Image 1 (cartoon, helix red, strand yellow):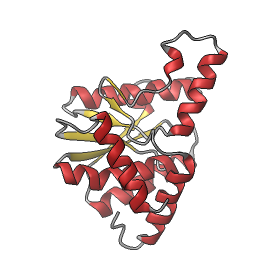
Image 2: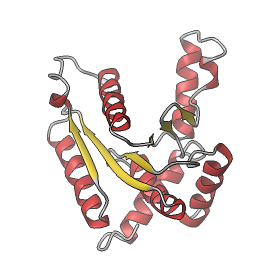
Image 3: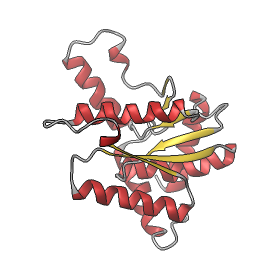
Length: 190
């Protein structure tokens, strides 16, 4: 699929699931990776169509040293060029980083940051979960012996969290983030 086809797919998914209905201010969880950059590239025009204000949220866990700082700098640069407000959180704002902090700790930190945004007036936080994440989550839950509730996988909406990219796979998000972003590298007219 090309960018326009992917955008139409996400637009249709958001409409079917009523993900953007009634929203006034949406935060996009952007790490700087392919999935989250696709989220930014796709949700920006869709929010514009609906008159929804956007804020980008980036969480620097501090777990990957210079790589994490480069991701933060990249997200800052993109947001500055696009004129989008950016909220950056650092792990030490919440607590010290545990000695053996891993992905589970990082996930809890991200959701604590997202919860803070919602308490501060953001209507919802869109995360970049895709169909690939859906499959991985379902397999993991089944391996753990989940019940029927857990076998449902990732829902498009849960509380203030939206997953507008569940209708896409990793190939789609890479096509959007790399092709669309590179095509507009100098101006970043996403």
